[in-house]
Length: 142
Image (tube, rainbow, N blue to C red; front, side, top):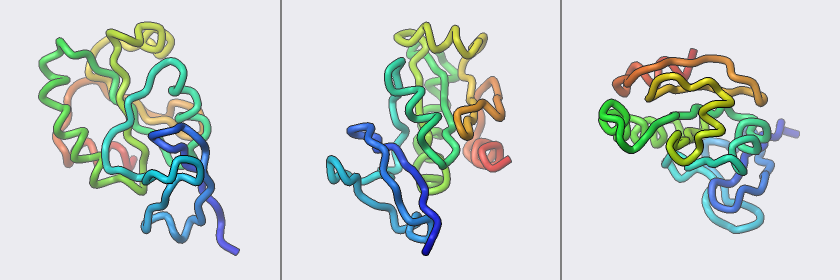
């Protein structure tokens, strides 16, 4: 019997269990029947953030950004591409620090963009400033 991986649905936010050896094939949510790995970043807010970082067995890479931030705008397509390239290895998510000021404060976001990686509910790595695609993918894998 293969090991199972828990993945939170980016659409209905229910937790799904997938066989680890079938992860690359993707999967559909057992509740809403939508794809679990859409290849796009998940928009998180105060109510969904904790569930995503604690219930996903895959590491969650979060882009803390703001709509007025030039470097954030420059990095947005890079983050989108990384979400597509890393879709079954990491969950990529975005938090708008303008609308989610409590989350930004809770995680001491002092500059944007800030990229933080979470594993098992704990922050394990952080980087401030925009990155190119190769740097972002390499950073996520460390």
